[in-house]
Image (cartoon, rainbow, N blue to C red; front, side):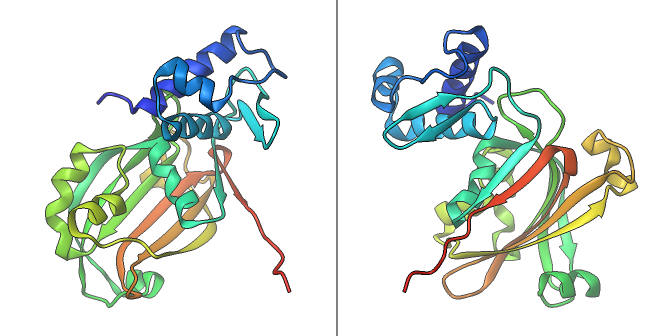
Length: 243
């Protein structure tokens, strides 16, 4: 599967940083200069810079520019949360490797945790998430549960490992995310996932539950994501209300 344009651009800039073309402490070319240099759109350039930021290579400040902070990427994934779009950005930078697909019937424990009726059927798609630009350890084990009305989308999901499932649903059925409810819990890596995550049973991890809700306040997608603690950082911004 070929990489997206922004991922290719991020790779090139990361190589230039590592080679010393852009030393630590210097500024990258401006967005406009990068657009012209690589014949890329402003959206592609911004997505590439966003990926470099997530890798810990650069930082950006208004009226200053994009500054090189490190010549090598930091380990793990840092998730910044301020909006729904920030949360969804994870899928753009990480591809899924699907290992399990099938029908799932919600038992009592699952229904209580997810807030869905027991006995309901869902399409379950499970596998690991990996960084598109690096051959490193898996970033997470992820399980996505999709409204049974959309079970015929599984082939599209399999053919588009870098695509956001909710975006595929929106594109095909017109149902979009208005709200995401997220719960984070500290756990230990269970034995059945240690091999998939290339770690040891009992190592610390974060378990993140998400419910994707449409404009009618109905859940049409849910997910369980397990991140080894040494590969994940969660960051959020809080603003004081004005008035």
